[in-house]
Image (tube, rainbow, N blue to C red; front, side):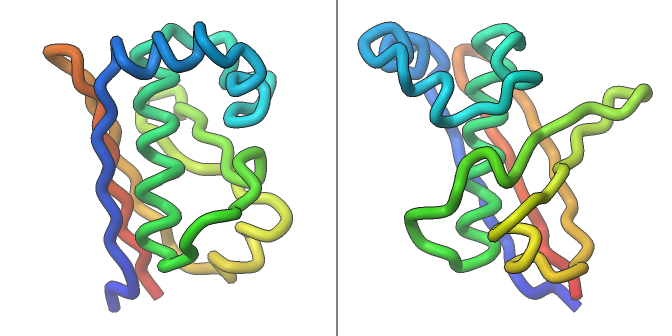
Length: 113
């Protein structure tokens, strides 16, 4: 049964400018493994975390590092959950898709229980 759906889109250039203006944001939003990704992948990962918050109906204040976006060998994106977000997910199946094209990064999350 679908328990939540979230979607988010990010303007990649605007996101790049934001990170340049506020360098500490990179460390706040992303785990060390995520930080080495190119800007379009960072924007998609940010969109994924925002979409996850929407799917969980969690509002603001989630710990960003408690949801890390990874890619499996075949390229499929997935989350690793820790701490407070792992508690909120509580064993639910979380489906994630990412895309970036034409200056826009997007993510969709479906939470299934």
